[in-house]
Image (cartoon, rainbow, N blue to C red; front, side, top):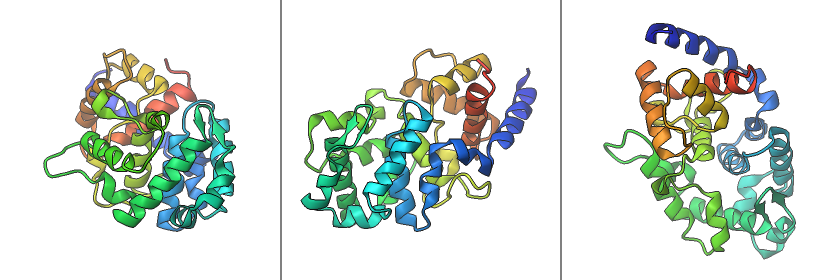
Length: 255
């Protein structure tokens, strides 16, 4: 395919998979069960944190986590104390355990009290065309709360070369418009043009097959390379192609 044909193909695939019925099999259904902005943000952030491995397991464990937070995540993190944090001790999703979760809950509470919420934490500074540095600053603020060293691996660091797939997915959820019924469009201080595609094994394989990505590793350099390719197709909303790459890889076996 030439460039125009590739754009037409990916535009069609993005439209095909950017649909509300996509929610049935996607972890984004968990924050979609809430209506309040802060509940959606916190449910989205925690669900994205768990988003690796089997999708059914991710959804099941994220839903279980919301139950443990009494179905009110913002109220829970705001009022968290040793007594209700105790109820998180036996939570586990792969390598993310109760101690990690307790730290994340305490850190989120501090972020809402001190910084006014997650959105403020991820805002880009003047001249920043992507969110890599914003993620690094958000991570530093998050880690200001006392924690075990083991918990740090669950908040990716693009500054150390991470693709930060789960964080870019969360940011897509918060920033892209809600018009399709999938993403939320809650954050207006970040432009969709500044988002990066959540890069994983599925999207990476499809991107390489389509000539959008050469780099073999799934790391920050690969994210930057894919960013450039997708922005050349749609500079205002490059991450709409996340739906196309993911759908082609997961549902169509296009690898």
